[in-house]
Each structure stands twice: as C-alpha cells, then as structure tokens.
Length: 161
Image (cartoon, rainbow, N blue to C red; front, top):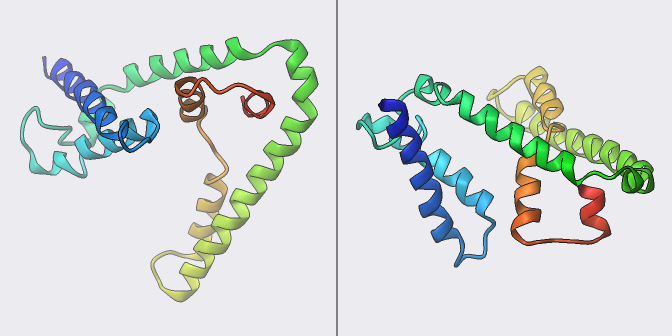
C-alpha cells in the first residue's frame, strides 16, 4: 500500500509541475526533474511526513523496478527511430560529434572542478577528474522527451537521435 501511495505522489507531483512549467515555456522533462527533487529524500522527504514525499533513499529504491521498465520503454522508442539508411547517412557525423561532445564535457568539467579543488579543500584533484569523466555520460531519455514534446524534425534531430 505504501508503494502505491508513493507512486501516486510521484505521478501527481510530476503532473502538477508540468502545469507550472508550461507557462514558463520549459520542457516537461524539466518539470519532472524538479518534482523528483522536491518529493525526494533531501527536500520534502526530510520533513518525515508519511505520504508527502520519499522520506528515505530506501523508499526511492523500492520503485527501481518501475524506473527500469520506463527506461526500457524509452530505449525501445529510441531504437524504433533508427533506420539503417539514416544510420549509414549520419553514422560518421554522429561518431565525430559524440567523441567531441564527450571530450569537451570532460575537459570543461575537469577545468572547473580542478580550479575549485585547488582554491579550496572541498574535493581532491582525483575526485575532480573522476567527476569530469562521469560528465560524459548522458541519458537519452531527456533528449527524446524534449524532441517528442516539441515534435522536432530535421537533420540535426536525426543526428542527435
């Protein structure tokens, strides 16, 4: 019963946040992310009120099956977009852009975090470099949601997907 209540709160929070984001002309995925932060264990969950949010990380982890199924559907949707002809057409460009994007993200995050590490003792240089490497990982779910929401079409969207 508690899992169903938590799931209901998550869906309701996401729905309400999309109503707030729409007049601001923000993508729905941004609203979902903000709703997740708000009802998570580090914001409303800290209040410890039953049914208001997720009070612990274990409560969030209990819904991992739902997250995995949702990611499976997203991966299926992305795979459904691919056509062998378009993959042959954009393959070289996509590889070059992917490598450049990963290297640029790593370089910029490394520079910023190493500067923070040298100016303060908030983190070590090794931690800064590790976080720079993590910065290259991008999740396709947000990209796909924005493309679908705005019904974007064109060569850049094809290359991005």
